[in-house]
Length: 488
Image (cartoon, rainbow, N blue to C red; front, top):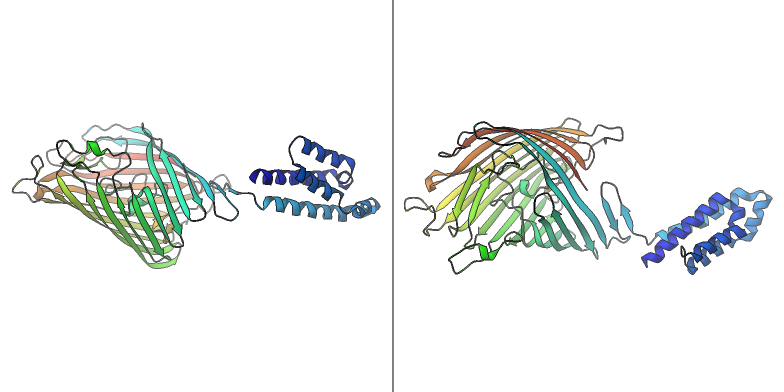
């Protein structure tokens, strides 16, 4: 049992200290035996450990006697070897504990793992309004805690919660099975649609994701079942079926209709890496498709000005209403490249919304039923200190950047500059939908102080806001966004 292993391990360490520090005479004398008896009597070691150490202390009495004749060094070396063997035997079954950048406990055979996970991100947005008054503000953007684990080598699970807002928000909540190159997950996890949305906030090039990402039409996490497989570092494929978000109320989706079902969606994403020279020189391509059936519930797509998260006002707002949408079909194309310290990334997403002609919807006899919305972005980064973005080709996602030198250990960390242009268009005049279009330019500086600590500063400028009839039409605010973050 674990308790016995700990007892044996502690006892062996105590014996080692006594044998080495007290000297050979004490090790085989009455004082050593008295010490072992005290440890046994107060419960530090059990009877089995007592007998083991007592016998070792009395072993090879001839060598102990030889010590008095001048053989101290040889005897001490022999005693230390005996103690070393005992310590190694006692530690063989002890759990492995990792504390470098994380806290992870695993069994020696690798069948069981428990890891504490979390992240903290603190932001401040200093906004310079153009026409519409927008207030600056600070916030704890993310404050997550969770545990991830592995059971019997193949069973994987994760539970993670975000405490940043007024309400506790469930993030990854799944169980799964993993073997070799594939896995299957059941529960709340990422929908395979959109690189920017699927990428962890811990590794993003900018403080906030692009305009098109992490919204109703490019959802992040949903409850569902999905499967993933990769073929070395060349290709990946993930597909799944998903319901609505955790906590969605089926009774509240529609009033006055007989059916009130939870929305359902299907998504598939495939990636291919035509060039993988090494971990820091590669080219990544990908495509995804998603089908969404609102199931009589409403569909509303909104976005803030720029990427100012502290602002609640949504300048773009395509509210299709309740029971107004038959289904949505979406395409996404992605590309990324890492070539030493330089990285490039871009995506294009198109959403085709098929509306109904039910009374109360914005559809008119002259307007077509289908509505087309789209968004895109391109971004680039450059490490002036020579590091590289960590793109995991076998996963089709980013990982943690490792600075060449660490602040606090004589280093300066990793320094990176970045630029992004992105656009989101929710206007389709031909279909009678004028929900707003905006374009934004972001310039950022990232300082990776350690492997898990980063400080970020972005300047974001709204270049164009097109929403005829709205007070936000033509408004072009700018903002300085700063963040301090740590994760484990």
